[in-house]
Amino acid sequence: MATKTGRPRWALRASAALTLGFLGSLASTCAQARPAAATTPQGDEIAHTVQEGDTLEGLAKAYLAAPRQWPLLQARNKVADPRRLVPGSVVWIPVRLQPAESATVEFVHGMVTAQTRAGDTPAPVTQGGKLEEGTALQVGPDAFVAVKLADGTVVRVQAQSELLLRQLRRRGRAGSLQSVLEMRSGAVESSVPPNAEAFRRFELRTPLAVTSVRGTRFGVAMGESGQTTASVLSGSVAVQSRQPETTGQSSHSSAAAAAMLTPGQGLAVAADGSVGAPRPLLAAPDTSGVPAMLSDAGILAINVPPLPGAARYQAQVAQDADFTQVLRHGSFADGQLRWKAVEDGRYYLSVRALDDAGIPGVPALLPFVVKTRPVAPLYQQPAPGAVVASGAGELRCTQVPGVAWYRLQVARDAQFTQPVLDEQRLTECRLPLSTLPVGNYFWRAASLLQLPHGPANPGRPADPGGTAGQVDQGPFAPPQPFTVADRPATLSPQSLQAQDGDTTVRVHWPAQPGQRFRLQLAPANDLAFDKVVLDTQLDAPAWTAGNLPAGDYLVRIQVLDPTGLQSDFSPPRQIRVGSGINTGSGLPVSTSSGQPVGRP
Image 1: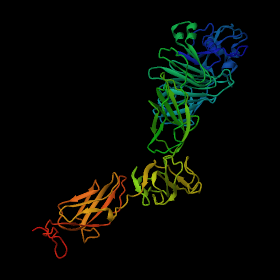
Image 2 (image 1 turned 90 degrees about the vertical axis):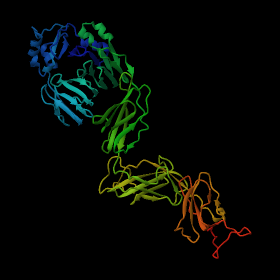
Image 3 (image 1 turned 60 degrees about the vertical axis):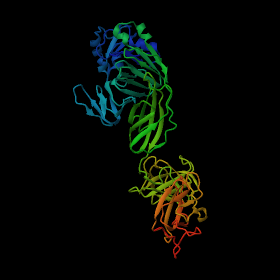
Image 4 (image 1 turned 180 degrees about the vertical axis):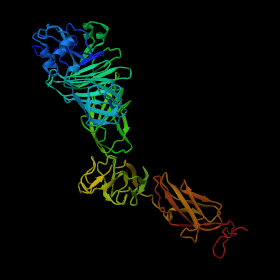
């Protein structure tokens, strides 16, 4: 109830070791937590400090469903005269007498169960379902639930959390909402809309903390060691340790264990209830390098660069910008964020850096699109980094069942800022490169579906054929490099220098550094080289043979370039292998047909 100056004069008693309050000042928080002449509360009760002119009927009207309920207050407080209350004394208002409210499940993902009463079998929650006071929510791994209270407050319960809706009440028949939630494990983020109601109360309790909110966005998390952290993005939070309340210490000691958080600040509360000093939240991680579209069908992978001072990273992926529809949540040792893949669609990323105390920093928020279908074709040729011959190369990829066309692009950079080739309606996944100049390039391929009606999935690029709404292009495959180069020159007959006519034959020719060679030898009458008697590769531009039968042969040579390209075979050059039998004048002896005479 308000005093004559309009200030609230009630406080809540509960079994908590710490209080965080979103109030006008820290001093007023402490004052409300300890009304004058307080007696021991019985369960959850509001301690109202009596002001001049207060009556039990007036208090029943202000706090309960109707003024006629004042006898219940009289019985609880053993008041002799309901119209004459002693100023400065305390009247306890049992919360259970206030009008009950309920909450609504706004969104649920994964396994989330609700237990209405102790001993009941937990049942899965469904979107749109009602949650009554006393309901215990248990959120499993990779799960999430968003709960909306009657005043518009949205409570986002993260994976592996337990939350009890301890109180869902209203102050009087048409008064402000009085909500108390008890977090037993995990993490909760809450958005409380601004409200002019002076008596509206939203409290989120942990074994160490109670957060009292009035128009703000904040987060509370419990660590495995029992530590509690609080971080504030908007509004202000008064943090007060309530440990002295259970140990009998003075209110002065209680006030000393308190701090005020302003927007952009956070603190940690140790397992013994001691409150750390407020500290600035770490800055938002840099997400400028995250692609606007992700196309990996097997995993959802997002990378952010390291942030100075970050011990870990906490990230979420949601279907909405308010993060009431979270599908993926995780804590990561570095900025390499990895989750199970999600369906094609539009999403939002929230990533925060945690400092050495585990306090989450300012979130970086980023919209992005997942587009994985239709799947891209697989590359066939050329191999990654391969060299293709100028005027004769071709790009090839696999056919994808069900697609109508393929789009192949070629560019000089991996970002494809200015494609030099862009064929958008190929019925086969192949593209000749006959017009492409010599140089280094990248290529990529995508599949296109023909749609009978309407637009494609979210994130669909504009129709490359110019018929909007009729084509759905899938993601491009990762860029693959290749090089276009001229084939090595074919050796001319004049370039082959031979020393023949003897039993040992030597042939040599000019070459470029790094080139290798293929040499073929055939009988002199086999111009088509159908009966090759020797086919060998050479590392040097020279060949020597000393064990060939005497006779005439044809030799031809192919250049093997370091790029992998090959020249045509040179025109055949005839050589003669001698027998070693000579006339008296030193000339080789030949048969009537001109063939060397061999030794018997």
